[in-house]
Length: 85
Image (cartoon, rainbow, N blue to C red; front, side, top):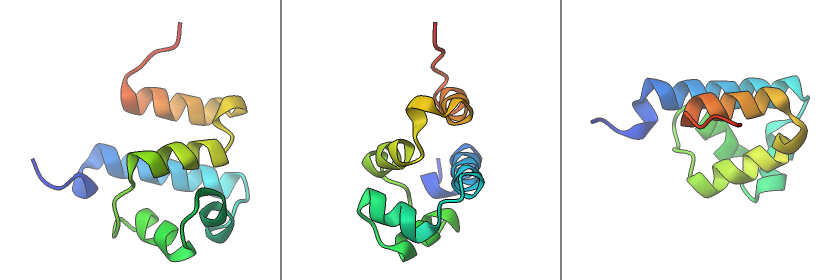
């Protein structure tokens, strides 16, 4: 198996997160500030130049308000294969 960063499922997830960030009108800088990264880190993640860490993933989900964001919940369920009862 190749590096995670080149995996099509991983890339699809990052693209969905990027689209959701844009849909919510959150800049890379704003997102970075909320998750404790630099804007350039967010840019590199979105361009597949840097791998998204699982803890950063969790922080990004919280920053994009996953608890009330049904679209984001669906994205995560589809990615993980976990279904909600």
